[in-house]
Amino acid sequence: MSPNHVKKSALSPIAERVLNVERIASEESEGAIVIARREELIVHADARKESSSFEKELSKVAKRVGNLAEIKRPATEVVTQPGSSAGGGTAEPDDYKPDPQGPLSKVEIWRLKDTKANHSIDVSRKLRKHLGNKLFALPGDKKPLHTGVHPHHVAILSPQPGGCPATPPKPARADKAFVEPPTDGPTVKVTILDSGYIWIDPPHRELDRRVTVVRGQWLNAEKKRWEPDEPDGLYTDPSGKLDGITGHGTFIAGLISHIAPCTRLEVVGLRNQEVEIGALDRKEQLGLFETEVAIAHAMLRRCDTDVIQCGFAFPTLDDYPSLPFAAVMAELRSGRAPRKGVAVVAPAGNEDSSRPYWPAALPDVIGVAATDPDGAESAWFSNWGSWCDCCTGGVDVYSTFVRWPLNGSPRFRGWATWNGTSFAAPKVSAEIARKFAEKRRYGTTPAAVADKLIAGTKARSTDETGWPLPYLRIG
Image (cartoon, rainbow, N blue to C red; front, side, top):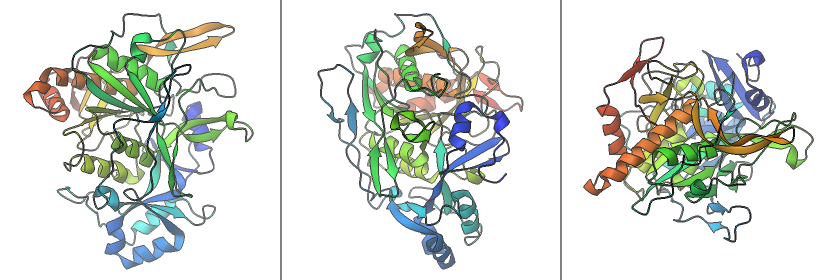
């Protein structure tokens, strides 16, 4: 199906709004919706060296912005709690700086010259013809896996066509003992890449004490610079309802703290790419999606951590791996990262699809599918396949949320239940953190703990195809 002609009948309101944005191109095929920045391409640097005709045709239609190792980047900013006496500033420890000649140097951003006549999905396919079936490698790859060019993909927080994440959240009763006070002993750092974090009044006091909130950054390719994301907040659609993503990161932070009291959390807010829902008034725009480059960038910048919980899942054009995410993982495994063996966890997505979703499908990322409450089979919404690493419960998950009024009285009182692989994945992140806290004195790494955790479970869950995945009973 041609870009920007996706069937609207199957879409959630949030997905429909994103697909109506002029700077977005989209394509529906085999039960998945590929969404991309209309004007931007991701190019493997070696592809230009491989084929002069490819480079010639690429230069005709697009202009090089730079590679991900060289584009200027400001320091990450801390978001302070409203009413706090603490000042903002640069997050500590310092942001990671990639090897200028390493894997990130292979990932180039190109911007189309004429976005009215061209769009990134169509141009990517046309340019690939000049490369034949040639695939390209990144430093450390055992074999070439990457296409020479793909569109700059967009991710909503697990963008299920029928709902986002899989269903809307439901109000739940309070459980004030859900999050324990932070421990005095050694802690494990978990970095959450998600919508951000929202402080409420009265507060989730014990959770607030664990959390540091930092701004994500998005790449302004037109100006060749990174710009800060806005913090998460109580954003609404034109009807006055919460926008469907609000509180997503807050929910995940509480869930991880509940399962792993040993954790301290860093929440990176990634929801800057905006959808206009009214006039050009800034207040009438919603940050409903993010790009693969921005998410991968955040993963690398904040990699001085033990576990990275990535809340995003997206399909790619023709199922080629996401080059920015693959390059970040190659950098993390190169030995230059400040901590060895960081465990990276991501949801499988909520489209009831067997197609690979990224970054979950990358070999070094732990891709988590969702099961029904008893773990016997896949949840009705969960993506599933050999590219997933494990599964756990993702139905009626309970955690911390926001307060939101309805007709003058609170509807959400700070707690909710929610469905989605977005809430199965943080359970696995928390369990890895909990077990790493127990084992770190033996010199192991979070990634090694994750491998042992998954390999050690004998339980299996299946979907309608019968494909078995290791089932982890957590929480």
